Amino acid sequence: MESKYRFAFIVSLATITILLVLNNQLMLGPLLVPISNDLNTSIALTGQLVAITSSTWAISGPSGGPFSDTYGRKPVVLVGITTMIIANLLTATSKQFISIAIGRLLLGMGAGLVPPTIVATIGDHVGIKSRGQAIGLMMAFSRLGTIIGLPLIAMLAESVSWRVPFIVISILLSILAVSFIFIFPTTENENPRPLDFFKRIYEAAKTPTFRPLLIANLMTQACTHLITTYFASLLVSRYSYSVSQSGLANGVVVGGMAFGNMTGGRLIGTSWGPKAALGALLITSVMGPAAFSIESNSLFTILFSSIMGFAVMLSVTSFLTITTNLNQEARGASVGLFAASNQTGAVLGAVSGGISLEATSSFSGLGLIITVLAITGVFFGTFALFRHTNKSQSGVRCIKEENNTVE
Image 1 (cartoon, one colour):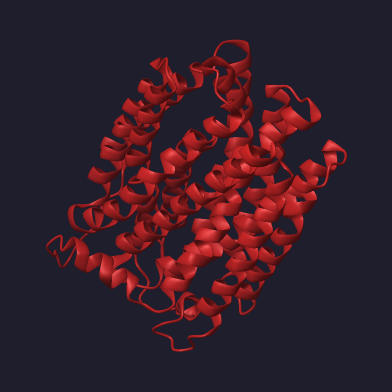
Image 2: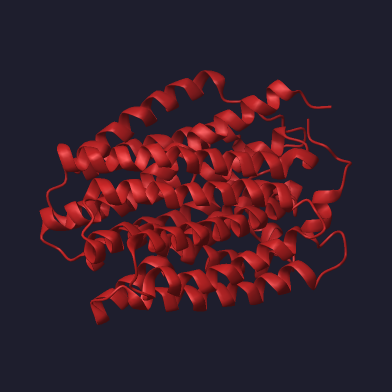
């Protein structure tokens, strides 16, 4: 029986880490307008900084998993955080778009190592029966933290400079890195194995359930990042919100996402959890046009976007929980591939949204893109969650297993 105190410690540690990584990623949303004004670039072009970050994130995510499986979680986390610190300082001091792009490329390399290793750490130290709850709580509270973080970032940018938030994030990451040297939990590796990088990636990817699950998650993440990248700019451009006001509204949407994380973690262990995850994607396909394509009162736009945020995060949490239970021996590699799926989705969302904005000079097309992405996610999600009924292939059934609890 695992200790409640240990459960709380692991979840708290994971939440703080993911909170900083998440704010570091999402902060570009409320900063798009001031950055584009300062650099004299379009919002569509500046929005591609999200895609630039995610491109290297998608590469480093799968790399971190096998390394942490072999050499331990703590060294990989520390390397990732240190790289993020350097990247943020470079971004804060850059005077040209190309310099900021290089900083964001470096950020993606470091940030990609952290979340998969943190989730794998949860898998190491939290029993399988409580794992979905732990992941849901981690994602929910880290999202809730951005309700405070993103408005603060927007206010700092508006009152001082858009560069200041990057310096603040660097300081907070430095404090976290120093504390991790002393308090990060160690994982016992009873059967040490050589790195076998490609073999571990293959072991993680060979499960039939996992492959369509990655595609479904990619589509869901594309919806998520399209929302977080362009929602604040939509409010500024269409409804004349200030940067600070758009940051507060963005916090409301993130609150919906946090509730979705928590709900998904609770539901995926039930018999109808997979149906809820797929139903949430159907809701997303309807809310996309309602939020972005239909010009109405800004409060309705915020409401529909919040519902959409709830729905996509319910699905993401469900997919991630299943992933941690598919292959115990290559858990880090599995979560790393999932992270690559996340960031590939981020690239798809940011690029498709930017192309639509550049081509039409309107946010209306973004809602239709969300619909297409969500419906595609439903198709592959259905294939992943219901085609395979064998316990060794079904992540849902693995969640219900009560044995092999990891202490």
